[in-house]
Image (cartoon, rainbow, N blue to C red):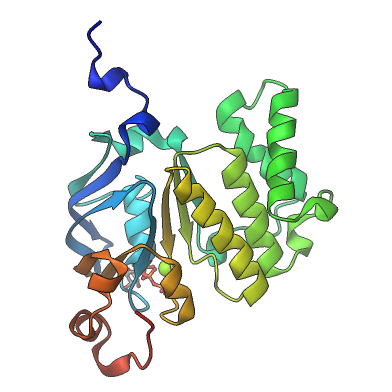
Length: 255
Ligand SMILES: Nc1ncnc2c1ncn2[C@@H]1O[C@H](COP(=O)(O)OP(=O)(O)OP(=O)(O)O)[C@@H](O)[C@H]1O
Ligand SMILES: [Mg+2]
């Protein structure tokens, strides 16, 4: 029997990757990203770091086709990622979420099932089970019927993580999930990120903090409009790279 490589499920072929080539993004008067190229591997926890205004959120949005790129390409398994958006779970930076939206925890997580089932079909028992398990996994079962606007920042972040899990995506993109949340919630979220990576998912996280939390990441992408460095955490966090990205403004990091 002849077995073609493309017939083999992704998980069986080992790591897959997102390949970003020569990506450029221009807002009207601001060049936000310039000629950025790197690869993101599945099975690794990858962080995007860089100073305020470096283009971290822009990079994530442009990779997913949520804003137009002026140049370049983003491929996943050698096909444009934006044509495979059903494989992606994306949680934007907190400031971009409408917290007045009248949804409960349960509603918000069930929204993750919409891509699987369609809006107009009734949710199946399987979907309900998947959503309930995801809420349980992030420790939010007691809050199922609470409106999301009445949760703390860390609880909200956990609900969005549950939605991403319920979506059963291959690629998980989180923009600053740790901003303003406590240590305990941060470690619950990191545990889940590691589990997803261990299950050979692609996990990409914008992270502001260069302190202890950085040690959780396997790989890093360091940006400041231009790509400064990408690769393993140890390679990227060199004094020279940090100086090029942050100037003299970085006082502490743990490599
Ligand atoms: N919608 C927009 N229109 C015009 N300029 C924008 C827009 N969004 C972002 N910018 C600019 O593009 C640059 C990159 O912004 P971006 O939000 O991607 O940075 P960031 O690294 O995510 O910053 P932060 O750490 O503050 O979240 C900044 O100079 C910003 O002012
Ligand atoms: Mg940002």
